[in-house]
Length: 527
Ligand code: FAE
Image (cartoon, rainbow, N blue to C red; front, side):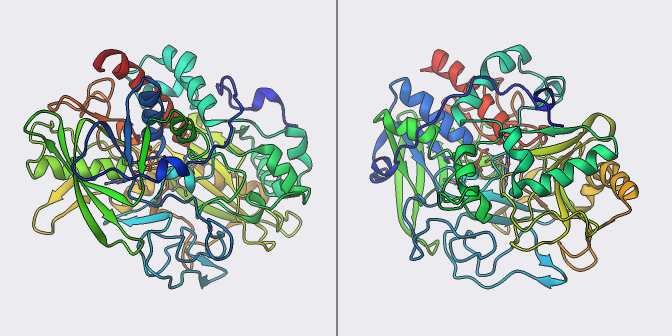
């Protein structure tokens, strides 16, 4: 039985969030030659929290986002493409899809698509593909909405210099409220056809003696109930997730960014990419911004002066930008911690083949609700993930977050003119070992086997990728204890690059809570 006690706690007060249109804010991109008080690079969690709190403090905020606004339907009447039918909207500047689940029943799933500034970036480094959201709202546009507060006793290993009481008493509750985090109704969940896959996941976890925990989400559960009842257009129940969700998910567009826009102090520039930040002669910083078309071509280059610049381009975006700006002398006083401490949050995926009597359901909600917590004993927290193919697969699918000790570093390759990341594929072995502490036992108990057809042929582990890049400008190392970059006053890091490689659970609530904590201090002290 599901009990309230079993839910992961710490979500704090839950505010209803109203969806407001962002269009008014997106219509006026930043003008070339302008002088602005605050420029934010990137509109994910860190950027959106920073935008709201600065705007509320009376600061005019310019948010520069390289991806699209995602506020206009395509020719099919929908803003976002379906998970099972990726099209030009689905991938960032690729001519062929690179789907995280690349194969099914031995058949490769990838296909050619027109090159377009689509929503999901599969950014390839030597040893790992890093998936990231692109557009106004960043990762909130593509993620599974799992809004997990780490267990308090694990927090010290995540950010040792941060006051734990403050985080759990003030900033996690504030983040959960701002994001609109809620729990699924357990009674509905018990009988909903779209969560049969999760109930099978629970049965197998519990029969092997693992703690099964419900996790909160930012999806509008009332909307999902209506989807299941056939009363509204389907979205999560249509499998919509990694290429965007057309209805029920409370993305940052509907939460933090809508509230920031409502202050009247927010300017958003979609399809604008920051390429340089350097000290300006008269104080502040010179920011170079490229305007892009939907083919990814630069149509204009703008130079803007900003009194303060907030790096919120995500772990990879911020890590790469700062590494290049330091190495090329644009920001010469950054310290030697820049680019370091990068990790993949221990992500590894796998599937299990169930018996015919353990059907997982052809209707699967794309929003996960639960996980298997073997963090203490085996170093793994496994999300029971959907496999929304529209057919019965008899498969259970999992994304594990594991205690992986490896950390990579961004470095500037001057000859090639690019930033590289030295992560090695073999570094996933500790993650596989940790995930096996759960799934070997479940397979032994159930008399089942791993699927070998999801990531290629005869391959069990999805160990080539991460959804959760973290680190690259770590709090208390590259920055002070509140994200101020050492060496250049007025420059701040506010995103997932502050977190040194792992959060023990899905990361966006922690990124949001940390941004809430840091911006409060910065507004009080620096402005
Ligand atoms: P992020 O949200 O990545 O935002 C950075 C933004 O900066 C992006 O919009 C970029 O386009 C933009 N940008 C980058 N470079 C530039 C530049 N030079 N100029 C202008 N703009 C730029 O950063 N996490 C969870 O907690 N729960 C989940 O269920 C979950 N599921 C996920 C599923 C998928 C498929 C993926 C890809 C991620 C998932 N995540 C999940 C991870 C989560 O979305 C991610 O940790 C956060 O989005 C990171 O937040 P940041 O603010 O660091």
